[in-house]
Length: 261
View 1 (cartoon, rainbow, N blue to C red):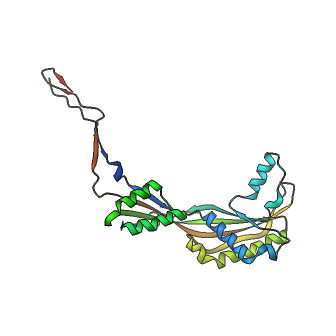
View 2 (cartoon, rainbow, N blue to C red):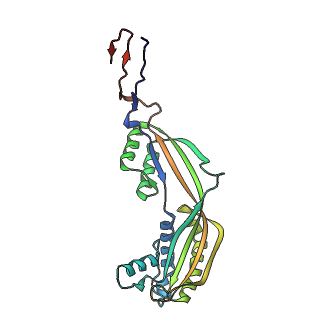
View 3 (cartoon, one colour):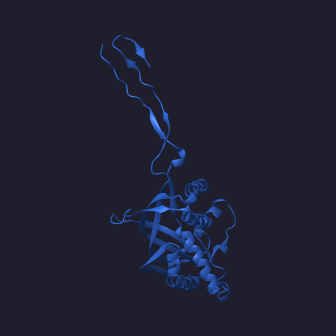
């Protein structure tokens, strides 16, 4: 009788301590633009200069969504939502020519890890406390680890939607918001939003009467390039074997008919 060989399903399992760490560099452009726009209107002192229009509500949630929720739940319609400016990152696209083309390798030491911890606290980098501790441990006493970083750039269309019960307020907010984009272009760059040369919009013409009031609207759309990076950190150049996971031990058949396993 011939010999039959059965392959083993044993698997080499790497030590958990050497598993790679993925770190994302990420900032929500809607939130960052909202913060800068709020600061801008405070610097203008809009609520004092134009007290008849009231305080401008700036955020990422459209007031119509809140009005619709109030209507569905039977609550009283809250007109204190106006005037409002809502920032919405409506779409983005990336060309094949730039897709994942920016790639680099470099070493990270304890000083780099300390700097990264500050960025994690600021919310610029996304990394768990556990993984930051692993990085600290790996770079103690002059240790270094290898990092691979991939960066991609995408063109985004960002809408700034303006709504108010007062048509003149919409027109004024339209001009002030355009002024914000032009005058704060450096600050926008610092939060990862690189404004391109195209600004378009509608000063007036949008109306809404669905909530029992005549609301006037305007819109500004800006094109911006937003960069996002991902870093993969290897804690060891050579991964040690933690164990051999034997899933199915092979059975061997010998010509005498005996079976060993």
